Length: 162
Image (cartoon, rainbow, N blue to C red; front, side, top):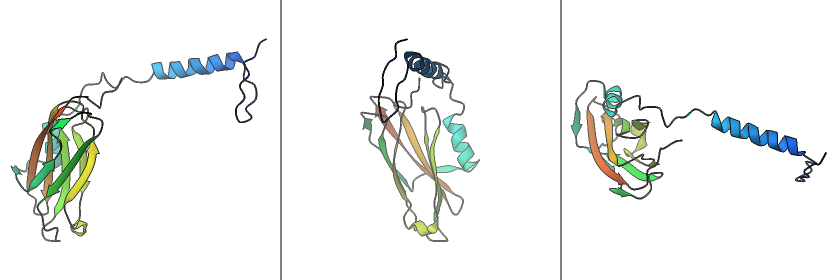
């Protein structure tokens, strides 16, 4: 019987059958992985926004959404949201939700804020599956909802699996 000698960090000898069996197991595990790319989007953007705000009216204003209008790579898109608010115990931002139209999940992120935050401002990076509209909604301490939207043209898509 011929053996394939592999010597790394004192492992010793590994025969050819074990190497082939390990490789076959890896290929089988990858082949049996669930195919998530074929799964349809289960929730619309509108229903995700309604889940966030209920039946409350959402007004434009008080929210600034900054993201590049042309995105070369959808894997890492800079995004910042700021809300006009004094951030006092009487008048502050409770939550900020960011929503999209075409990613597999319509709710990108929900952030909870407190008056001690000082400023209602966040900055992060997100993934975008395709050219689409992004919407940011802020829930204020008085129960009102304010929003802003921006469009992003994506030349190299992200959020694709398969």
